[in-house]
Image 1 (cartoon, rainbow, N blue to C red):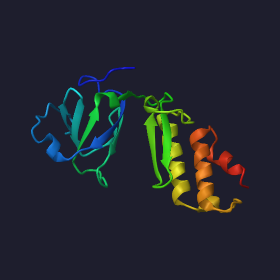
Image 2 (tube, helix red, strand yellow; image 1 turned 180 degrees about the vertical axis):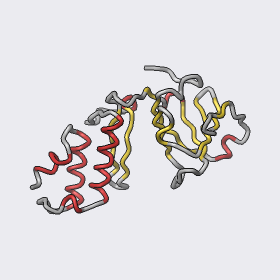
Image 3 (spheres, rainbow, N blue to C red; image 1 turned 30 degrees about the horizontal axis):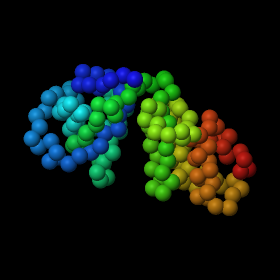
Length: 179
């Protein structure tokens, strides 16, 4: 497992950043400013990033966990431990998807962050994005279920999403059972 630091965190990495209050960096000095205007403060444990853009950042996938609803283009301060960075590329099967069925939040995570023996399928970045888009459609719309046999739409949603997360089945293959 690669070790990340102030010299390599910005090159082909995946990271989940946690927003922190601005007061947390009040006494700290900015160590680096990127060409896009993001500011970085390095510590021995990790780094702070002060930025107005998250998600796909150059050749990295950096997701922000906001304290409140995040609006892109708002400047946010976030922190990540050095151990929160993982290698990333667009072709390797590095990512898995999790869905919180109480909030209907859909997110992807790096395979090195798996904490237990969850049954998941690893996908590359492009396939992960495509499956997440499909899952969001399943969760928010009902037209896709129009010609299917089922008693409870919420149960159907969960069953099909679980298949998309834990198998290599396509959306069409997952729906076939309900025709």
